[in-house]
Length: 406
Image 1 (cartoon, rainbow, N blue to C red):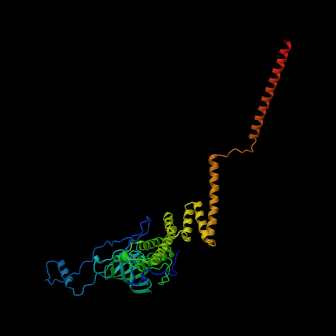
Image 2 (image 1 turned 30 degrees about the vertical axis):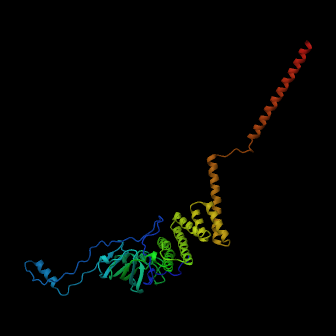
Image 3 (image 1 turned 90 degrees about the horizontal axis):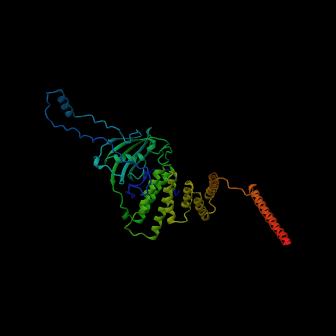
């Protein structure tokens, strides 16, 4: 794995001044990725508050009297806001504390949003409180609870979010912020702003390198946590940034740096795809690396592993031998190669046994039948020779007798 972060950082700790990617789709590689789905709350908009029209009360009916009293009440009780079950499984709920600017002001996936965030454990312990946190909505830059619920918030809205551990920091927890394993969280979120992501074609090379590196690092965090599908997602977004066309001049050195980020993303993506058993996709990632760097050890090693997992032992051994020539002291390659050679030998033995069973046992030259056949053949030859000789002698004798009589 390339450049893994040593700590499990929170993806929402990026500063608001940082440039973010605006893409919401992944590479067009035909891969199956777990994506955050757009969620519709399915509820009507809040009704506007009743207005006191100042009309006279009508006494014609008890209902009208009660309605008039409710309208003229100087201190009506505020309506009780309901909890919204975002995913329908009770693991992610949202409650509006302060209403925002209306449904039309909700942010879109791919936009750069800025929020204030306060994170508490269910016992009330505050583990994090930050202002002006910026991230790209839907890119997996933050925990799923934020990525999903901020999409449902209106501009200026303040909301309370109850997040199960599955949509927070999971079974591993986090060191920064300090969240125990399997901990449910209570988040207090306020949406401050939303803006379209940057135009990649207009970014300077240094900005593109920085943005792609951050997406790759976020992918590393997902990989370390075992969230391999989200890791592939982040690496795919980083690759889009490195491969985007540019209207800005780029120096050879910057182009080399951008290529280095791309190769690292492809290598890490192959590792994540291997974990997901997406062998064909992992093989394509390795081939892409080797197209840029034919002697990349990690790409060769992972390509060999993929081929071995597909049962192509001969090709896998050939690839790993090539990697071993480049790095003879690498113990990992040695161990993998030894294992594959043994498996290949076992495979060949099994194939030979199968062929023998299909075709039957061939005749053995040491069996008794062939010597008997040879003996019998020679016996027939000698009998034929003796017979011919006897006939010849008889013919000569007969000629002598006939001549004597004459």
